[in-house]
Image (cartoon, rainbow, N blue to C red):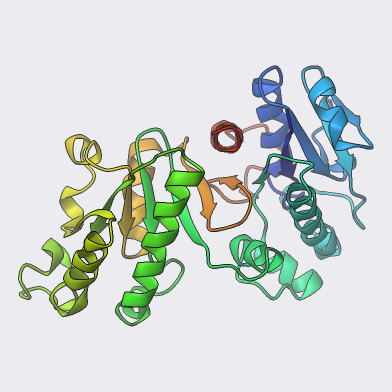
Length: 319
């Protein structure tokens, strides 16, 4: 069984400690390899440095397999060191090489700190996802937040709310729907995905009384894609899409902007939400939290999202 690679992320954040605790919880079930500088693991972490990914399955039940990647600096909890920026970036690239060459089943990434990467290495990407897409050759990707209760995809992500109506286009929404549909089939094993599409405006515009995008083009796009064989519902009022009975009627929801998507999943399953990047030629998951510098090194970090991210990566790789 090929292992899941855990990238170290920002070593001054909670990434190393939640990775160590996730391994402890899953050691006898899912083979994994932590990729980073062993000096950055929490003191007392039972680990073994390996030379080859094939060693992971045998070692993982009794020690965290570590593929060592030396960093320029040490790690002080809560204080990112720009000297480590190159190491963080190179670990991500190395993980992609390993999974694309068939040595790993999937990648699960710990959180990075974008300012530290920019300060220390002039990191040119808005975040993890864009860098992974570039490493994969520039493919189109979308972000899914997933748990056992809900899968939801925001059609636009980290932009101001005032920019959403302009950024949201027929071509862009179509591509988001296509990527989501394909990924549900190939990575989640759903042969005929049912996808719910939210409206942009309150009550999905209520016939133009509260916004016109639904009438101007969203209704037509959904209708056209339905004729092409996509099982779509919408545009639907976002405020009635996420209760239990509504969720039972679809396999994934596509929301029009960041908070419209993330508020429901974080309300339903705050600790167990997993970030999945769809559209990559490999599986990538990550915990749905940041570096949490304020609690790093204090033993307070909750590993649940990292555990769920590893589980989901493994499950997707064996579907």
